[in-house]
Image 1: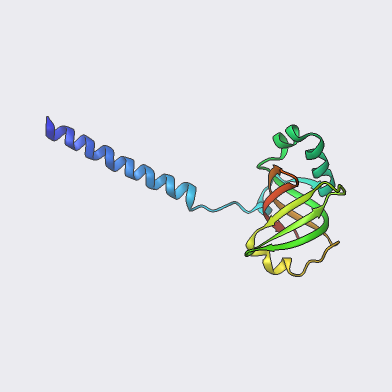
Image 2: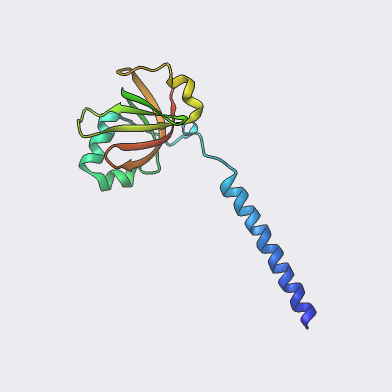
Amino acid sequence: MKKKLAIIATIAIILGIIALIVVKYKYFTNGHNDPLQSEDKIYITAPQLYALYSQFEDSANHKYNDSVISVTGAIQSIELNGDRYTVALNSNDSNGAVLCEMDMLENEKIKKLKSGQQINLVGYCNGILIDVQLDRCKLAE
């Protein structure tokens, strides 16, 4: 009886280890989806996106958070934070902007941009703090 119980316990431990390996592989090695490849992009301008969040934050959160946003606007500023660029798009509102944390693969392209230039960025929306936040952004051609 003890031998049978030991075999069952060993099999359960092996199955648990296999399950952990599958979960680790599935969730930690697949990487992020490319926002440019998304078929479900929401197209909007930076001033429209900022206005919706500043006036109707709850409904904007429901509609845009975790969605792929294709946002068009004029560059307000470009900052290098460590090895990542953040591009601020003008919202036409002095209270905030649309901040786009860029994918590091875009660094060489970002170096060629200038304030005031009209661009289109695609990224994942994270809601609003003071500014509307997008991350993993890429330049749309």
